[in-house]
Amino acid sequence: MAEPMVPNPRHERLKQLLREAEYGSQEVRQAYQRAVGAMRSGKVWTGPTADRWSAELEERHHRLGQLARRVVESIEEELHRHPPLVTESEANAMRREMAGRV
Image (tube, rainbow, N blue to C red; front, top):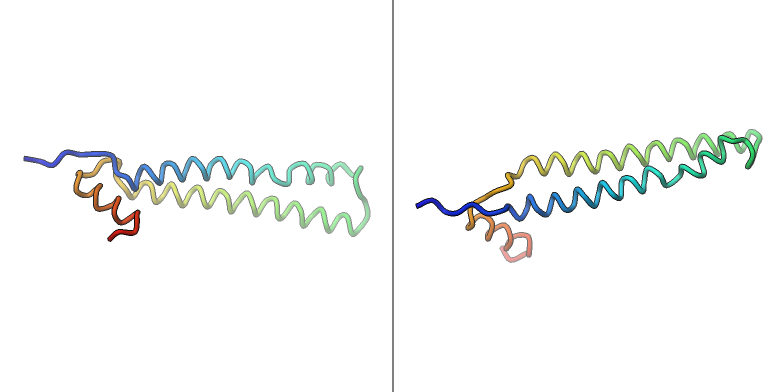
């Protein structure tokens, strides 16, 4: 008789992690938006130093968004490597491993 299939604990944990990363990614992408907008307006600070500072701020804002996207993409890739259902004995072994009780 075939062993019953149950939700894969690793898959479930990765789905939870993905939700958290997507939420955090949204926050990260918005982190510098107000400052970048203020600098672009030309009303906050002007001059060569302000231009360099503003360019660096925009670059960091862009890079931070890229890195946040890469984190989400990496979790999605890992999630696709794990099936949503596994046998009960596989799930139990995964739970033990995830708890550090190998």
